[in-house]
Length: 576
Image (cartoon, rainbow, N blue to C red; front, side, top):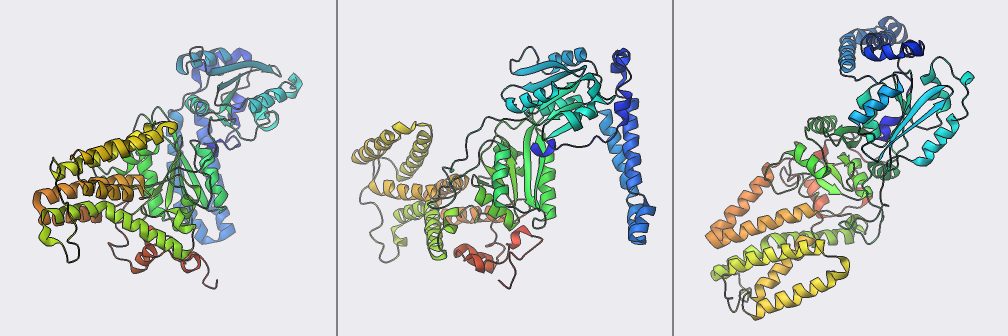
């Protein structure tokens, strides 16, 4: 996004001289723009690259080792020259006259059809200009300042190279760059920038005057903390990367941007710390994102996840989502890679493990003792949400399996429908209530809760459709699911719980053992970007397991996890 809009020097000046031959030659120049000048620019850039990498100069400077490196780099220069030539072949030239330029806007951009396309024609210093931008995505105050400054131009102020004069002297904007390809210019404008076209020039000036509609940073509803920062990500990617940059003032923090989607051209940013993150991991994520071939990403990061991870029907999440800048900054310091997608208030962190998904920022906002206690309570709730109902159902079907002291477990009476059907109906009822709570307006949420608790639950038990124990244990399992920090992990655990209940009903003890084993094998064989999903349990890492069971103090947590394969293992000097 804004990283691409940094002002740059033009690579070649020969095109400016060829474009200033007089107004009588403009019409003829429009018909043959893409041949000789582009080849000249390619040759000039190639010659310049060869000049800067002259092996004799480098040998004088750095010795014969540098000269050998330069000689080995010659094939790369040829490859880059060929790549530039291929790029030149696919370029669509920008018309040099105003009339063809406006006509092209009508046919390809919807000018005079779409009301949000704004075109402003003006003359500055005897040079006809066209300002092209999207209403609602451009900042009016910046464009007004630019136009106000240009109104003071006089004909004698203009040189033969009007583009150079406007770029370096007369356009008072922070981020300006020339673009000589029509498609690039159109894409920049659709992304929120403004294009200033100068008659008689082969390039247009892209002015970064974006103003996206956005809300203010607010605390995420899924990751609330008692104490801590209250800001969260929003739908504007530039705001999101700034929130992370505010916490990580590290010059090694890198933001690589690319556009995905043939039609949406959605901005996707890969964030990592260069001297910490594993290079192979970064390259793997970058390559997978570049290989995505879709019309667009209107649903942002979720569609990007499915297109890159390709996990099939595995219900467990292989990436971790977060809407908190402090959580993302902490993961970047561990060696993870964060993926920002424009129009999404959540950020993907790669790779992830099962145990990453069960940790919460609140644990690190409390003392180590209280953080460990909160972590244990959360673990107990997650395990209860998975195994409490199947084990109790197994004791009901086979009372002889009850250990001594637990003889009281089991219903005193049965309902009018089979117990396994009661479980399935209760599970569907909890899901239905959850979806209803999402879609219910806030003023009506309390009324819906009363209806769910009193009218449905109490009357269902009174009429004999359900028994009290089913409602009790289902409520405990639902609380454990809601206590899971990762919403996607909670949904996956619910599917596993249903599988265990059906297996216990069908095959009793063998069904429970086989279903649990199959799920564990599936999780063990699962990998997130070539990282084991059940690490540090499988493969076993004692120190990492201890750090999961106990929330260590900051000064005792001196090394980064082995899972990320970081370039720097130590977090801080040993003498601290």
